[in-house]
Image (cartoon, helix red, strand yellow):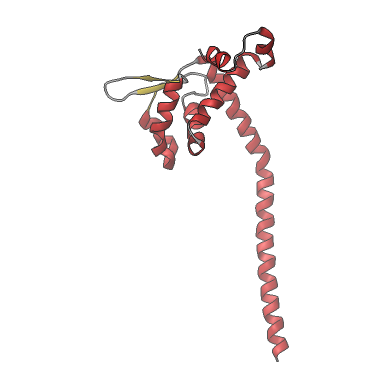
Length: 163
């Protein structure tokens, strides 16, 4: 469904254009990106996190209630209603009505691996950037201490100059 919708949206009618566009994975990635962008800039992180939460480490598509999802979102939980509505209407997520609480599930098996891989790449990037961030923090702290020492030295110098 996703691939077909994206083929139609991009007006891809030949096999050559299909392969140029990255085949099935490329089409899925662009569809997913488009739906996340449809959630609005202020909700994109929530949408990506919800999609990730609807997967697990065994590459399954667990059913989760809105409360379970909100529990992971913390202060962003108020954005969940809109994000879920957009994800369900797009077909990425399926709403499973149940008497106690509706549950939500990722709509396609082939998205699980893609979402997990994407998260893995983000984790790797964060791991790579962490030392640079820590170095930046050390430099900022050193700069702050040096500035403080300069101010103290300037104050002492001006006091001795006045005598």
